[in-house]
Image 1 (cartoon, one colour):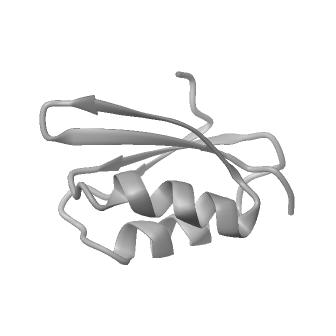
Image 2 (cartoon, helix red, strand yellow; image 1 turned 30 degrees about the horizontal axis):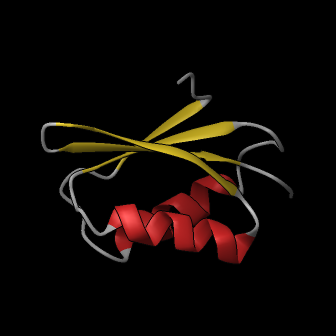
Length: 77
């Protein structure tokens, strides 16, 4: 998936990936996609829940070895 920005959260644990995602999302334009790289399995539940709460769209989750990639589309300002 093509992302407009990438956020590296490898080595960070809950709640830091969500905190950092929230900050970056404020910098993106509506419709842009953020790729979040993480290695904490909690992100697979946390990010979709955060998206549901904030109104952004969780486009998908990909796993390769220990790395997890989550794609989030900004829905509004």
